[in-house]
Image 1 (cartoon, rainbow, N blue to C red):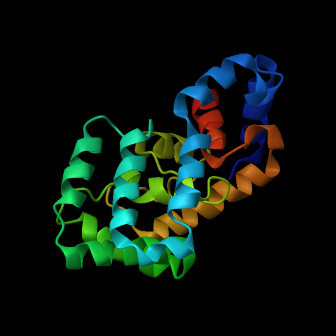
Image 2 (image 1 turned 90 degrees about the vertical axis):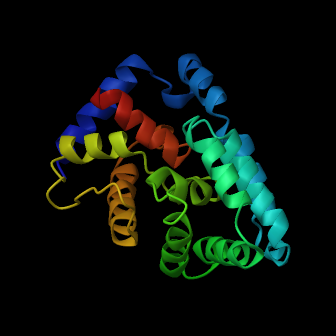
Length: 206
């Protein structure tokens, strides 16, 4: 990673927005994305004690994805209809996968959830990374394809971390570790959530 480039971006960003994401212009953007409310909903809905009620988990998954500003307007109804069309046994698998991602074996849960998404033609990064992000917005990362490719290219990491449209746990793990390392080098004002940090990178690189 080119650390000097990171510090240059940070300096440029604070030159424009001295208070970081507390700047009035940034607060308008944050309010539009509504991360706080959706995170509160996810924390309550996906508490480990709730996973004994799979139908409730399924409905919460659909609600959160439908309300997310980070999911495309085309994918929201596709996700709703596809998840809603799953058989009772398939719903159990989807719920078990999410539980593992959030509360157990993350890799197993990721791969299990991916196997649910593939036949639904929803095996996309936004579909698999959104719910973990909302549940733990300072630990998990929302993977947005164009932003991810821009970040890797700008920091000269696109040979080490090769982005592919089909999600994989290996990339999710390694890219998350890379973003963690950058976030930890920067001023905390840039990372009220992990989406805020990648938002800072996206805005600054452009």
